[in-house]
Image (tube, rainbow, N blue to C red; front, top):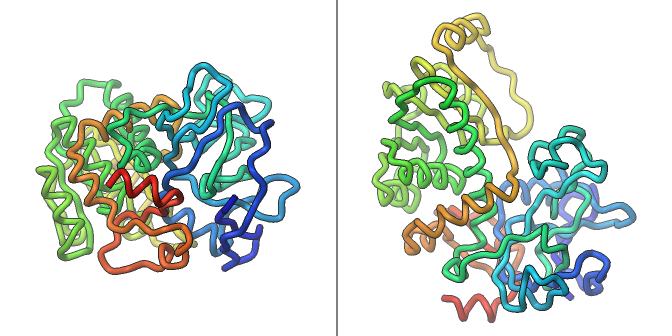
Length: 354
């Protein structure tokens, strides 16, 4: 079968190679991959900035954003033809207290594995296997947009955490400020508007698909730097990972403001920060700043529900390019206007969905 792989620790080693079919010992459910979404994590893996191959393997099959159909199942929980998405992170083998409770996204000892990222092959291959517990069956209406469930699940987790923090006091939150109009920022805006919040999104792109997608949600798109913002927002969601943007965001907000950090900062950045002023502001105003990553089954389910409630045409526009897996190099070459790029692994099946 075909698989898109990198050689462990070798920058620029991305290649499409032939691998044996998945070992039945990997799980009773055999899945045919339909499509795989690409993100900054995949780019980091290709340039060997992160990623770890499974034990005993010299290469790693990449791809963590996924959509597939069940080819066969020895587990009664799933049937042939079911539309599914595979969970990325899997519990550590001990397991720790969090993994044992099904909260593998909060693993305490770091011994988890992540498909296509950390010590476990990913989904950018024709077929893969796992247990029924490693899959979520999707509504057939997500046959075209289900590849977005995984990235949306990370945002669904963020909103769950925001709502939990909000419950600590009587917080009448009504305005959300989001930095970044990439897929994560757009999903944050989608879920904010679905919750009835007044939503504002800041990005540097002056025109095109990003501002159009934001405005289609009924949200407001801002082309000015967030550092110049005069909005008094109750919830701040940072989706860029840009150190200057993060620094500016930490200076915003009023009483009981919740700041969620979703963007991963690339490389290193040294910036002057007035820690005393930041501490004074957070303590005096009961502010909260927290980071979040990954997702568990509950968040995948919430993400699927959010996508089902969204306008299908809006989701279609978010995926700006669909590229056959044979042309993977083109998919990794960024083009003007890109928002989300998807590799079509089973191109014929994907064409039937269009």
